[in-house]
Image 1 (cartoon, rainbow, N blue to C red):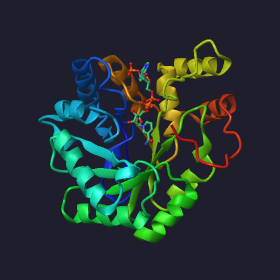
Image 2 (cartoon, rainbow, N blue to C red):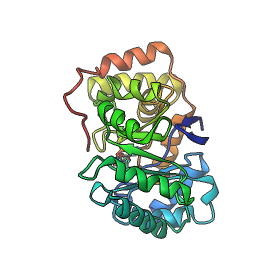
Image 3 (cartoon, rainbow, N blue to C red):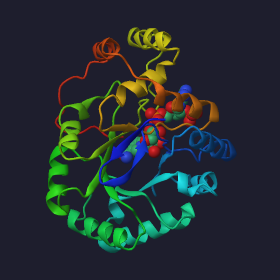
Image 4 (spheres, rainbow, N blue to C red):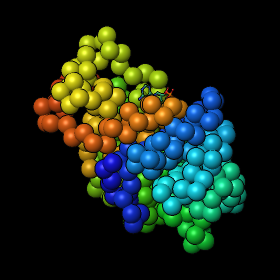
Length: 279
Ligand code: NAP
């Protein structure tokens, strides 16, 4: 599995990680097996959030005895992101995850509390060793600019944002801002949540043709395309070990220039929207 730098975090992080939204909704033992298979194959970046129901409990089982391998990320809800509320939310997540620290802790999206309050809590949590780093999610370039002014240079580890073949808005301003400022970009819903191009569609056929030349699958090609820029990592969610193994396989593919150009043409980036799309 390829690794990439992750903002101000000292160690590199797996390019393909594991999302966990809705992972608690199906067979939990299959979900635990999927996450463990993912870890076996190097998808050590695990993403969760206090918002994701019992996902943190499922992860606790999956990482039991393997905490050192994992780059563990959770998120505070904006409605809890006051200085005190952030500290308390973090303690609750640590308890559910059965761990003593998070590798990165994110503000899930911008809400009513001033950024200063959330940043003060994040920095207190870093000082206390409860989190190793912090970042944001669903921030556009102007939000990031404001956050940098509040927190200072080099404090934001990552920005987790919506990015898939049919939604490439972050390519306009968010990725360039993050690359200039040493912030990792984490692509969420890299398969469009549940909207992956069908094999019958004309653009789906382009993916399949490219996949065939690498002995790969269309989803592996999609993940490879999305992570083609140096700052971008992706966190597909899989609730079966078979899906997890397929996704991990993307970490080995290096797309040729002509294949990137063909995907770019089949899934055009479009104009920059007025506001950043999010799920
Ligand atoms: P996604 O990863 O784009 O897609 C998940 C869907 O793809 C599931 O239905 C899954 O099915 C299926 N899938 C995965 N691997 C597959 C494979 N190899 N073959 C066939 N189907 C496969 O959607 P997502 O869960 O929305 O996004 C990923 C993660 O990003 C989330 O889980 C969450 O951690 C994070 N996220 C963050 C935000 C935010 O605001 N920060 C928002 C949304 C998501 P199975 O479950 O059956 O395997």
